[in-house]
Amino acid sequence: MLGIGALCAPQFAVLTFATVFLHDFGRLGLAGISAAMVALQVGAMVMRVWSGRHTDRHGNRRAYLRGSVCVAAGSFALLAAATAGSPHVPLAAIVAILVFAGICVSAWHGVAYTELATLAGANHAGTALGMANTIVYLGLFATPLAIPPLLAVSSWSVVWLAAALIAGATYPLFAR
Image (cartoon, rainbow, N blue to C red; front, top):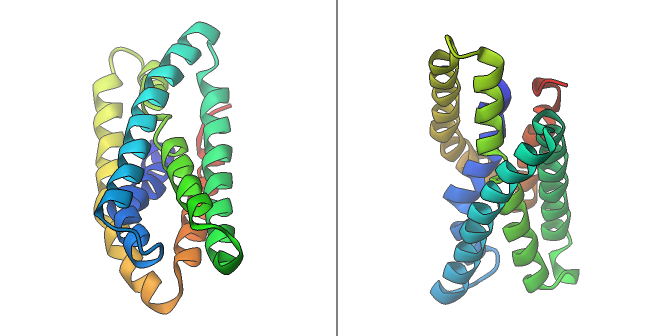
């Protein structure tokens, strides 16, 4: 449950601040920001369905979740590095990495909730899912409150690095 809630924090960072990042850091206008966010959201929707089907067919939800953590953490670390080296990294590459990171950190939800319900069993699935959603919504509340002060004393690179570290920290929270 804690892993689900914590892994949502980087996702909420993207959902709540990617548009600000694209405007302030990338100097994109409404059309560019909208295109990036549509690509991110459509990609996330497709990957959620693909992820569920893939793990249903292969019976590998736990391994998939651990892999998702690694890919999400890695993609946010790459985004942090790209923004730190921004004078040498094309803006299109930074936008593409942001979209990729957003898709990666959004693709695992259905799989995680299914595995949680399976682990909890039929008699406790509702309670387990309710507890997980409570933790998720704590993250939804805390993440947008944490980013402005972090950004005020640092940079977008640090914000995305924090997202990478939080994602990576969830690895041991997903069962083997």
